Length: 283
Image (cartoon, rainbow, N blue to C red; front, side):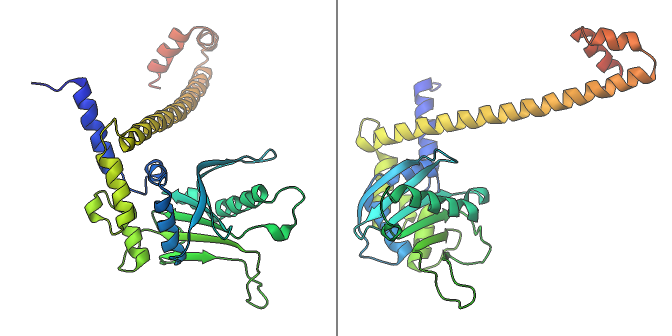
């Protein structure tokens, strides 16, 4: 007996859910709704098991009235008032150095209130978690800080950029975390904290808390896919329009060469006649 549409939808949703990893940015944002997961990731990347967060915000909008605004994957603050921006980046263009610079600059702008002295700026960390080695240094982690070129000493502006390359897996804490970011099955994960959260989300029934979060996630995926499809369709339409214009220009040149001026005039007002001429010349 063939499956109903509802049953097929359930099977399709389960396939999508089963394939998700922490490198899927939309799924990662749902995982990080549990602050303990964010803490664990930061503790590992920062090599500081005592790091504790006092607040975090997902999909934080940093507006800029005079330029490009940003929506941050995760913005959080620890108990020492240090701030962290965690970004999941699956492509090189999303993790280019000037993007990291802009994230850091906009964070500073939003955290320094009017009337406050520059010395009140907190330590900031922009952390790009990347699927590949986008800096091509064959390293697992990159710490980027300003230095004084003449002396080689640090320039203590307390602004830090970190790239965590998850394609590099080994038995170190960072290597195990990198492995967790690409694991589809919780049994393949090293961290109890992350695996429990992922299992809760992937195995939850629709009416349970984790299930409701996953339903929202799947709807967001649908919207994202629809948006990307529309954008690709628009781009394809533009390409086809350019090609069509080029063919018409070529046709006009051929008609002019053959002295068919009347055909040029008629085709400019009659689309059917234009199409017939394009076929005649094999365009």
